[in-house]
Length: 375
Ligand SMILES: [Zn+2]
Image 1: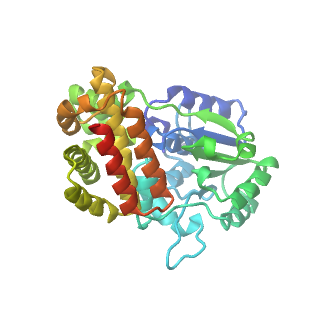
Image 2: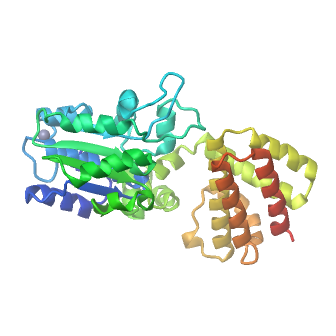
Image 3: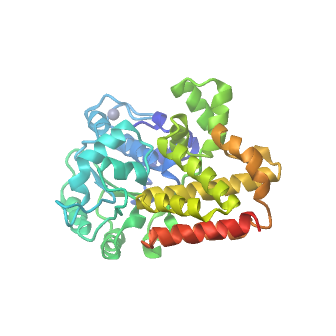
């Protein structure tokens, strides 16, 4: 986990390095931004730099014993807290029970998100991963351990917004009375969902989306793309390295989502209720995560088609496959219907999250699309 493995963010890296060199490290820091842009990667690289006892200037040395342990994520002074799922075997799960899955996922890539993490835990796609109340006891126990080898103990909390209230309250107490030489690195995607009392006790490090240039360069370097294609992918990836990687191997899921989006728009245009009904049955039979992913895809496609309809190609983020359909479809997404369409898809999305009945939600949605796409 070196700074050099983290794409872009040179200014943040420099700030972190300087904070250690000048001995002005805040005991609780909040890395806030899209994990696809590298917030977790930054926290990990900073931790290795902190632990490194070798010759370090702009990056950890990579050869000292501390670095060796960090590179396998088995440093005894590094502790992780992250959302986990309940299973038949584990009723009150804590992070430690999934530490092997966590390590092997991160050793493959420092750019992860909830979708990948659920997959790595072997979780049902409908599962909700949370940081449960039981975790707080575990956090306290770890903080009371003496640090083994380093001057510092580091606790990385990934997605603190997924913390149950009871656990947040205990964490707050801990943050109020900092433990000596203990560093909390919180990595969030939705800072606005964290309780404000915790927010106010952390130093915020905003991790912005990556620049198109950052991503394109990395694609050329690491994936050996020619510059033209790298630029195209980087453009659509809009700031997320994770998204860029996913586009490279356009996943089965994204192809499926686009297929269904096309089908939905055609069926609604034709207003044939029987095929619409069959289509709704298919969507309703998908797992909740797949339904959410489909709806997110639709919302993105509506946005892109609307923008394209305005002729602003430069800010249209579509793959070649998506563009093909969009050529004929985009004129039908305009000022007259974009807001109601957004509203309907967003409502469907939040109803799905609340465990609503898929058949009813998707039937209603199709009817609303019919009314709006061809009044
Ligand atoms: Zn080192």
